[in-house]
Image (cartoon, rainbow, N blue to C red; front, side, top):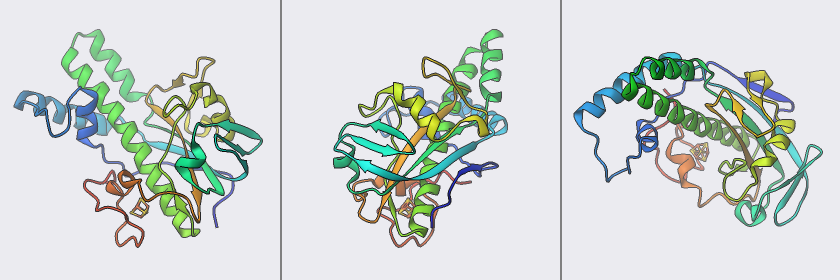
Length: 238
Ligand code: SF4
């Protein structure tokens, strides 16, 4: 049984994936190797980022009312997400979520820019971006675990502004799952505050298409999951 209403998750045991941080610094995984100096800077920024981040998530499960090849009607909203029927298969529920690491890290980055400590400012900013991406993965895995408990397979996340989904639908997503319980606001231009926040949507169904979503399991910490599609490489759980 999926829980009704908005759930708020706080105090999450989030681990920041260093590869995500380096990706935001422009490093290609398996190709670019950071120097010892960059490694040391990364370690300092990761330690500071872990102290400053306050990962929280609001999420809400809802039944799907109707579907078209590119549309999902849910909670009084009609979302237009190109090719979603093909990508997700048969989904009977969706979960909308807003996740954030809070604003302390970005305030520290601003102070570092101000004092011209540019390398650390840049690396800490990437740590914040990597942290919120890791948090979105973490929540995707929580949603998968909740879905499996209700007998439903859960898809990978998508977000407004990606995979051809118009960023303007961010407002509809916030109506489905408000960011206010975790302190996230949305302005007219669809910009979230704090900046290190992500909104996302997953689908769930007994016959949802998930076999090609290997990335989800690769970071999931759930041991002995009978539905695991690939071994965990490095989880996003401390
Ligand atoms: S291992 Fe994969 S299928 Fe199992 S709960 Fe985690 S993400 Fe879902």
